[in-house]
Image (cartoon, rainbow, N blue to C red; front, side, top):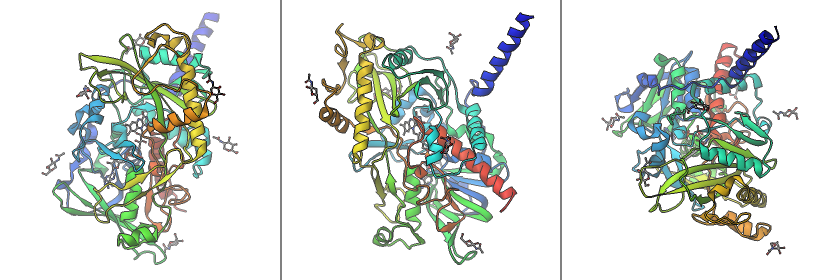
Length: 548
Ligand SMILES: Cc1cc2nc3c(=O)[nH]c(=O)nc-3n(C[C@H](O)[C@H](O)[C@H](O)COP(=O)(O)OP(=O)(O)OC[C@H]3O[C@@H](n4cnc5c(N)ncnc54)[C@H](O)[C@@H]3O)c2cc1C
Ligand SMILES: *[C@@H]1O[C@H](CO)[C@@H](O)[C@H](O)[C@H]1NC(C)=O
Ligand SMILES: *[C@@H]1O[C@H](CO)[C@@H](O)[C@H](O)[C@H]1NC(C)=O
Ligand SMILES: *[C@@H]1O[C@H](CO)[C@@H](O)[C@H](O)[C@H]1NC(C)=O
Ligand SMILES: *[C@@H]1O[C@H](CO)[C@@H](O)[C@H](O)[C@H]1NC(C)=O
Ligand SMILES: *[C@@H]1O[C@H](CO)[C@@H](O)[C@H](O)[C@H]1NC(C)=O
Ligand SMILES: *[C@@H]1O[C@H](CO)[C@@H](O)[C@H](O)[C@H]1NC(C)=O
């Protein structure tokens, strides 16, 4: 009897766990979506759809999959499909992919902000989710209250689950990630939260869009959950601008379509049907760029570029922010297994600490260490420990360098550490990394058996000896700043879009992507971006069913 009860309880608990996690099960890449993918050169020069989505990226893919349940949808994506760049589909190949020379078509478009910090953005169907580190963790609670959106939390929950049971995996921790996890706990980043997708103070392991075999399942696979016959994805197609018309509402202009060019340089026009919409999901650089190119922005800037004004809004392209990435690279005396990030430490000050291990060739010019690379026989095993903090408060701006060419990347400045509070938070995070170096767990990485934080070999700068000294810690933060690639802003909620992501002062136009964030959600943003794509799609279907 007791045994039966125990068994029942056990199976109940197991079921509960499965229900709560509801993750994807290991599977091969699913390329069904290719049935809907067209080379833009093969599409008509003029066409009509219910919805047109600009950018088949991280937020864009779940959005279009959802809208395609009921409506015809055109996605216009400047990059190619992942099959053209198969290295993005594996963790091992992704490092090479990020380091590849940018030929104007490669999936990782490089840019350098005016701060002088190198950066990349996705240029491929699936967007930056196809070139990223795969770490998957939901938004922090405050995000929902501070994002300017009146969230329906049950729909948020459903939207996350929809994403998670499609493309999110839980893998066993690699041996280095276990060492790192232990170090976080020994350095006082507690409690131990085990495995969870939730944002909880303490140490946890989280999900990944890479499965156990290191295969990437990015946002592009969410397209498979749409109705493929209603979906048309144009690749190698650059949207140049949004078409507006005043015919159906004299008081404000309505988006009626987009102009895009294919790889032969031919111009196409796609229009939306009555009650349809144009939705920008071109990312934090692409969406403000397109609003400006289309005549929505500050009078001075548009005037100086001779762009006809559709609606003046000085906030377009403002509040551009990028979370600084600071850290150390520790050379390991013994070989480390390469690992992607599976673990994060979340301090009560909202510093986020993550780590990767990689085998780098001796000739490697500078530490990078996002992805494993184990092809060279002459290697250094390197553990990279990095921190970011939520926010940041420091912001900059984006402006066009050319009025006519969407392919000319806009100039972006993030003004890292221009707000003193950010510098203080970096110092806190780096002190915590200093604590990690004193843990028993990380002694394995020492070359010499010395006390405390002594005995490590660093590739690149080491932490200041005296970590109580604010000035030297601040200098370290400023001089080692790199990008965590979580840049956001440019079309903020409340400034450029309203609480339904509609572009203020226009009709039939929204922006749904990282450009709307006033702070980066969670430890890493992709989970939230995919949730928002799905969420907004559901809300639009709901609105159309029951018009106000
Ligand atoms: C190297 C790197 C590592 C990262 N690691 C992680 C991680 O481990 N975990 C995590 O959560 N986040 C990570 N991120 C961040 C995360 O991937 C991004 O914040 C997120 O993917 C951005 O999503 P988005 O929808 O805003 O834009 P994107 O996914 O970039 O989508 C924008 C899309 O629009 C297209 N586009 C732009 N302009 C045009 C145009 N004019 N016409 C047609 N198409 C256009 C682009 O080609 C792109 O496909 C990382 C990012 C990078 C770059
Ligand atoms: C699309 O068509 C153009 C022109 O024929 C060609 O150069 C390009 O390689 C094609 N792209 C793909 C992904 O097939
Ligand atoms: C490993 O790095 C080297 C040097 O950057 C690069 O040439 C090579 O293609 C990479 N290999 C893989 C599998 O990432
Ligand atoms: C948001 O704020 C409300 C009111 O202050 C609070 O009750 C709620 O718990 C907050 N929600 C989250 C998710 O933080
Ligand atoms: C993960 O760990 C469990 C328990 O040690 C083991 O049974 C399983 O085979 C591992 N999975 C993989 C993919 O290595
Ligand atoms: C025109 O737009 C305004 C502002 O959104 C709206 O209040 C009004 O109802 C619209 N008029 C028509 C005829 O659609
Ligand atoms: C470390 O820096 C603090 C603050 O500047 C200073 O008071 C202290 O004397 C320094 N310690 C050592 C050992 O130099």
